[in-house]
Structure formats: structure tokens, C-alpha cells
Length: 98
Image 1 (cartoon, one colour):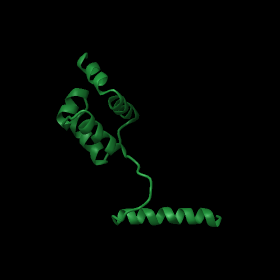
Image 2: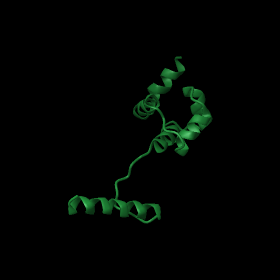
Image 3: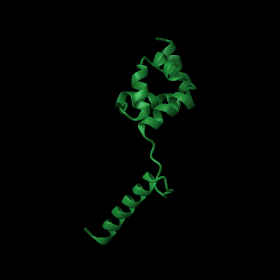
Image 4: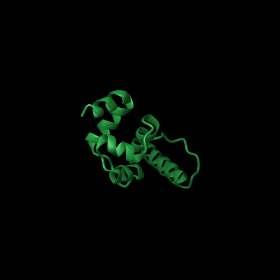
């Protein structure tokens, strides 16, 4: 391993440790599936977990687990969240047509 690679790895490790301690870091913000689930439900649609569960046919328990980061939404659910964020009206209209 060369010095540049080592220094890059060390910088990342130091930033991760600082982040865990609650210190500000220059790192890139990464959105987790949990962030996306809650943002889509709450900010985009303005729904409670119960409303979202009933509208999209997903159990409230599963939604809660996704939002807490205890489970990761499968690819098909992540696709649904992408569609909802890009065109919430169309997603809701499609669900009402069922």
C-alpha cells in the first residue's frame, strides 16, 4: 500500500470516528433507505405510518422497521419510493384506481 492510499484510508477513519462522536466533519452526506422512507412518507405525502400502510398495502410494522433502519426496503419498495418522490400525485391516483 502506498502512502497516498494509506493517508486516504486514515482520513476516512478519522472522519468516521469524529462523526460518531458528534463532531462536524467534511464528509459527504449519504441518505440511507431509512431517511428516504420517512422523507417520502412524511414530507412528500404528509402521511402517518398508518395512512401510508393502508394506501400502499405495506404493513405498518415493516414501515416502522424500515424507518428505524432495522430492515432495508427491498428493491421493488425502493422503486416505489422513487416513483412517489418524482410524481406523488400519479402514485396516489394509481393506488386509488386499484
